[in-house]
Each structure stands twice: as structure tokens, then as C-alpha cells.
Image (tube, rainbow, N blue to C red; front, side, top):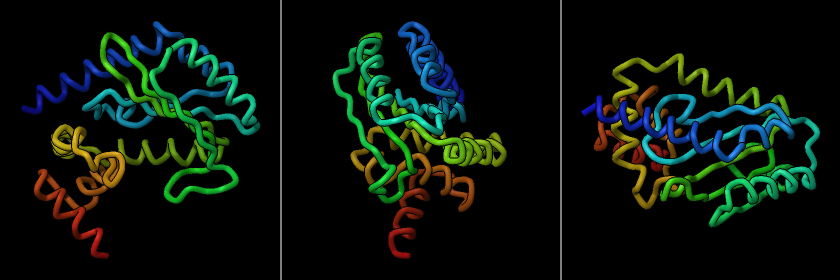
Length: 192
């Protein structure tokens, strides 16, 4: 079972690489700052078509971020693209930064691409979190995370009420190893 999940992760990362290179996304982003591919791609825990990208730039303006957005529209021809700023009016549980949320077709499937524009300190904080997760991953924990994520990625509460970070925390810090254990973890966190 786990071999299939590892193969799925590998194929999704290869497809992501092809999407990013064939559409010139990295080159576009590099004109606006330092680029980090993060999240499940970086962690090698992909179970669905979702990319998290950090753009480090201490001085990017909203206007420049919209210029970036225009270039991304041209390159990706997305079916949906949304912007929000979390610099002045902070949204709970979201980092301080600028954001493009993109839904774009590639090879007859839809990719979700999240691009965050961060200052250096926020970007470093997010990168350090990913590195901390990598340091904590054992083969067994990686297996559990891939299994649980694969079971949940299409669940209606995924992304809104539960996230990949919930799964990572459950497995890495509470030793959750299966889907029932994860739901018990979620219920216990709601009651705290």
C-alpha cells in the first residue's frame, strides 16, 4: 500500500515540475523575489495536485504583486484566481503577506497553486517549519502521513476545517497512525 503512495507522490512532484517549467512559472516568480517550493512538494508528501510557493521579497508592493498576477494569468490561463492581502488587516491563522490562490488546468487536470509573498523573516519562519517537519519524519511517520492525507484530501472539511498541518501535528506529536486516530485527535482538539 505505501509503495503506491510513494509512487503517487513521485508522479505528482514530476507533474508539478513539468507544470512549473513548461509554463515558465519559476522564471516569472524569480523576477519578483527569491522562490521556494514548499509544502507537501518539499516534504515529499503529495497526495493531490496542490503546490505551495513562497516568494521572498521585503519590499514588494501590492501593485507589483498584481503585475506578477498578470504574468501568472498569461502563463497559466487559470479558471480561477483570487488575491488577498494579510499585511494590514490580519486574518487569523494566516501569515502576514500577499497571496494568490490559483486553480489552473494542466494536462486535463486542475492544480491548486498557492503563492505567498513574504518578507524575509516570515519566509524564513515558514521554511524553518518545513525543515523541522523533515527532521521529525521517520519512515513510519511518513507512511502514516501519506496514508491519512490520501484518505482525507477529497473530504469536504479538508482545507477549511482540517489541514495538512493538522495531519502532520497529529502524526508527529501525538503518534496518530490511522484515520480513526486522526478523527479522535481532531475531536480532542476541538474540546480543548
